[in-house]
Amino acid sequence: MTTKVTARIYQGTPRNLAMLAKKLQVGELIGVPSETVYGLAADALNPTACRKIFKAKGRPTTDPLIVHLHHIKQLAAIAQVNPTALALAKAFWPGALTLILRKQSCVPDIVTSGLDSVAVRIPQHPLFRKLLKIAAIPLAAPSANPFGYVSPTTAEHVRDNLGNRIRYILDGGASKIGLESTIIDARDANKLRLLRPGAITPEQIESTLGMAVKSVHSRATSGSQVAPGMLSQHYSPRAKVVLHSVLSLDATSQSPDEARLYFAQPTGKPTIHTYWLDSSGNPQRAAHNLFAQLRMLDEKGYSILHAEKAPDGPYAAAINDRLERAAAKT
Image (cartoon, rainbow, N blue to C red; front, side, top):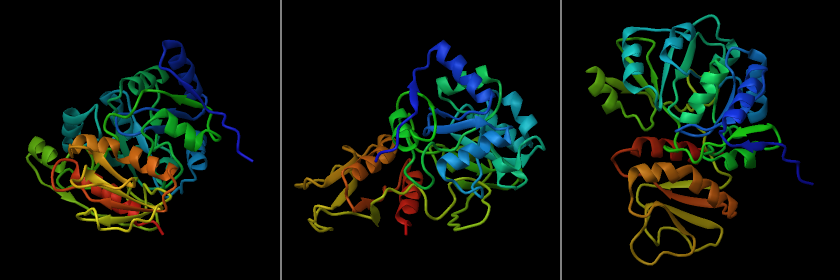
């Protein structure tokens, strides 16, 4: 017996945005678009509403949420701001950069996994920004998928995974970037740490600030995390993922339950079980397509997925981070 899907997808009309904003104000959950991936939003200052996020996703409360703001003027009310963090915010917001800062007392512990820090960003997606402005409240919004599964990049992905657990989804088209935001720990203004790679690179940040950014390769398995996306296993399809630095056409068996996912379209004669992130190997398009391809291969029923890591270059760190965590599935 299939579970009834109750979620409805709404277009971003003024009437719909006003209605969805009111739903958020009274503690409802909304699937929302962003330039990174789709999120599951609730009033960030309402602990009861935020607990609904964890229940809907099956997410452990040790994994904190990101608080999304409409305007940089709201930042000081949510977090303790230092000059370095403010410089980053002015340079990269709105955009795919999340900052970890000391939280203000108004932020509920459920949002921060009981820690004294909070993750915060201003999204770039125009519909999400309109919703934030109309609702006039900060919104906590992790990815809108069952915990640990592949992140959603379309409204249909959200409905497919959470359609029987939520009622409202705002359709903003396919996510432009397709990977979660870059996360920088900026609690110490003199020692920035990259906690999760994304579209905004450490090199861009270093160039902007003139200071070094240290990469922290976390592979935590338990306990409260300072930022989302730091667990060793995450972003995992149902299929077992096997990573390859270079994947040749004869590197895997011809078994019909095994698929090959290349970074770029391989030369030679591919089998019917051969796929790629982008035909020409364009890094930005490959990143954009990663989660959608993983979902598509799951839908085809493959049990094993041989995936090729991205070569050095733009988006490589972000793509390989997601693939490595997907491959950590037990």
